[in-house]
Image 1 (cartoon, rainbow, N blue to C red):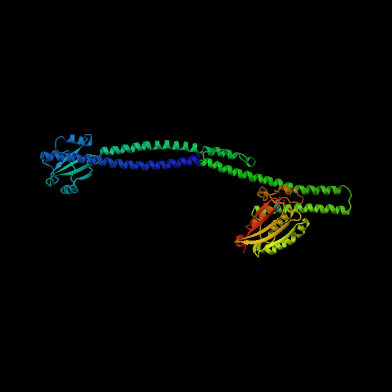
Image 2: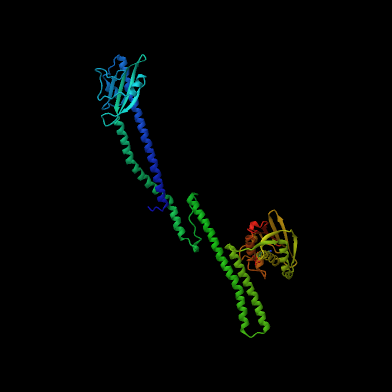
Length: 473
Ligand code: ADP
């Protein structure tokens, strides 16, 4: 039995507690047995003494009745081997020629004093016998006068024997009971914990490549079934994350491979024959565009990786938000004009927050870039800023193609692009919103979206008013 196993520990605990309980019960039973035997013995002694006293009164004599053995048998249920009896005068002296059983027991002062007051006394006395004797001194009272003292006693040998037998029986039964209970407990614990062994073996088989395996649920709803359910849920979440990581690697490689293939193709074609300086310049410009795309992608991936591992460092400084929005709007005017979209500033409440002066503009640039990209020519993009309680809300609203509710749930997933966006040229890799969201989260903020297809979308950046919420000054 390995002590590291729960079954062994449970059995040990169970056996320990049972031993203690049995021991306490044994002690209690021993005490009750002694009390009950002593009580019965005293009652029988009193019966005998009373019967002797009554007979003496009836006979008007101070002599003991001759049928003493019969009286003892009547009250004890058996004839004691060495019953002790004596009739004394009121001062405790032996009656001349009186019947008495040897050996004599002295009358203690206490018993004599009690007897003079008409009170009976029980005493346990040591005699020549190896066992003590229980003695009762009962005064015989006639017309308010103590006429005689009846002294009866019986050896406590039987009582001692019964108690010793009880201890022997307990000593024999106790280990046997413990052995049976311990063995039964061990079997029960093993039976109860067998599903855990089964789970352990199954869990050992589950690896990163076999996350689809699940533990068997019994459906009983007990602790082990709930454990299996919880582990299965955890496996499900692990499976999802592993899948996402694999998907992410595949998407990232794909996104990197596309511009690299284009780059390689363009350079190879250019090198196949002699070209004019203008043609070389054209190839180099196009290559630069692809390199810029790769570098943007790598930069985005790096930022997301830093945000994921919590090492995205922010240099928090007070930021005048209306001024910042005016700046990013001015920066994007050319692109908006190129798409035939009007980009304007709406209501801007004078609010400031704490933010990173490099990352915060990037967040808004990404959102405005999307709004321009996904708004057909003739549409409008409006930036507005307001404060609601302890929150600052910045809206980037467009009158563009919009998003269905299903698409809205997906747009913050890495590399996700809605169908309409994929069919459109000039789109990104599907990282822009994830980057924006990571920056907002690093500022203790979030991004919410409201959109309906064909009507347009509003992306709302929610930032806290207090700098302290960001750990800033
Ligand atoms: P992308 O580089 O493709 O723009 P994003 O992460 O910025 O990647 O956006 C993810 C997807 O969300 C986009 O491909 C597009 O389908 C959708 N989207 C983002 N912004 C808007 C918007 N303002 N209007 C409509 N669709 C949008």
